[in-house]
Picture 1 (spheres, rainbow, N blue to C red):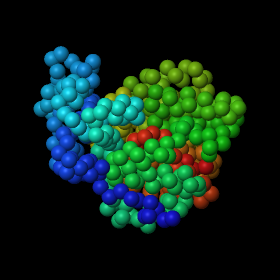
Picture 2 (cartoon, rainbow, N blue to C red; picture 1 turned 30 degrees about the horizontal axis):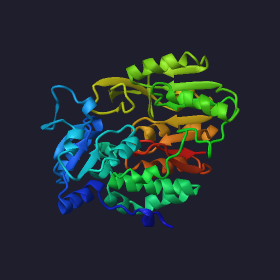
Picture 3 (cartoon, rainbow, N blue to C red; picture 1 turned 90 degrees about the horizontal axis):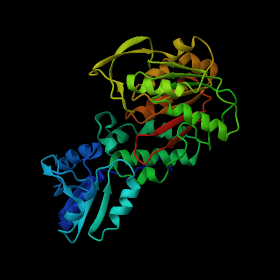
Length: 365
């Protein structure tokens, strides 16, 4: 079945909610006041949806209650006591399935909506028109994928990016990000280049994957992380690995100094409006012709530039590649195309490692 037939979503699930609310007249409650809620609330307004209440569990409500976009935050239990039926939008990103199950158990809750707020970041912007306008290129990637789960994952990812509805990626979520056991064959003494090493979590995950595969520890680890706070945590982890070299740099297509937005979190990124300056370098320059057997990249939209800076390494050594492809809407097109332009003998797989659209990885093996 061609990809176009798998793309069933056409609009935001919040737009569908707007129509449902107008039909039923049931009030809407935004549950939570964190980062996710801060992204979702303006989108609700943009869709013409009236948020009647903003609430948290009574036990989490401060005294005096805080304000959120002009709403006085209320105790969720007290809000429910006012109505026969309400709809609830979850404005919390963690433990979504548990939250959905708990909220659905209240008899007053008619429907629980979980929205993938990651799709609301401007650099994640995605529309059905973009897919339609680039249908031939998306079909090309789809045809290159090597198993059914990869193809289901691509369709689920695109449907979720259009709709924001978590139901799509929930059906295909895979374990062991960067090292999925079903497709990844690790070897003794891997030479691992970790671009976007964060706090060392991928190094720890690699060690666990090697143990599962009964393989010897990595021979060498080169970890790049430009964010100062993350780098400090990375260095603490690296103390356990004498074979690790940590560089406070970003991966790029050349040596340079670039503006960088740093917050000590997962989404620190190269940005023209960034308040910091960081060093960047190419993998080819860093390795200077030496071998890499595994190249991982999660670098907030800089993946294609970094891959271009690893062209010689990829061409000569054919390392396993684990490349995040969710940071830019064109990544599903341009990243596979570039890899195939360097070597045509890679086999492609796609896996989603989260219920939201933030952790979709292209594996080239």
